[in-house]
Image (cartoon, rainbow, N blue to C red):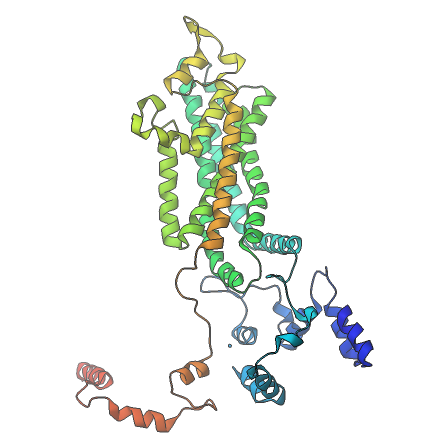
Length: 447
């Protein structure tokens, strides 16, 4: 805008006051809403539904008339081409362009219209808005987790379990059950990611923003959700079930469950970005849960695994969750009672499951889960960057445009009777007439 003002002064041009005020208003950066957008919404009568979702087959959205005004796809284009401005523009474009007369100020040297920081902020605001619109899902997940935790802590009450070799297996099972619950709790991320891919690919092709600007806010804004889910589960179950009473061990269990949930959401987000369809993502996501559970070190103990399947133990996120939680619990002072030789109850329990690691393996598990989360989010970003959208994009066009493309209407938008009558005799006279046949069948039935 400063460049336009400078050139107007040089040329002695006095712009219209209203147009000048409008141009300056829409050029201001950093505003929450753009005046140009608000102005267009007001003209089209869409200002009353500016924050309403368009809707689809499953969600109620704006009305039919508002949807028509929301889509520009023929009268506007036709009228513009017929206008003098449109004719002058078409004539000017049809001439070869002399690059020597090019103005440096008129060139865009960047692919995107905003800076990287502005793109990141815009995508963060958009992701937060989408999370607010899907708030029911997060509330439902938290409520579900609350109910399951309440049932779990009534089944495994600490008053019924002692610190001995027999009840150590109960504690081990309770730890693994918590891991499974938080792993499955991230599964809805699959459907939410798939439902947004169509819009993302359209925005990517139109150079609205790069894939990283979409992927990074999606990962960062899920951190509070993972914190909440892990906090609800740990707070309700830790002391009621009767794990080691040290507060530091409570915080360690909370940290590890948080990282497991964060890894879970990242994993299902990556699966959805690669497979891109709801059916395939759901099937592979369910298979991923089964594989992670089987190789997690509880369903099949590490010593019982074949040598050629040992790799599965180390790639499962539940493995590191199981190692960290069991080391945190069974190396506590209350499990140091010696039962045979120099082996304590805690060490015997860990050895029976093949999880007899040193205490520092807790922090190795924390680092492994963080690394998995980072790698999965990098894979998510790469998939959004390089993979093509599934199928062809289908633009929504008006019925008049469709009929015109099919040759049923003329340029004025009315049915071309001459064309229809000309094409009608081309069909074979021996072709069965379905309408007559159906009428004959119904008339025979009712008579």
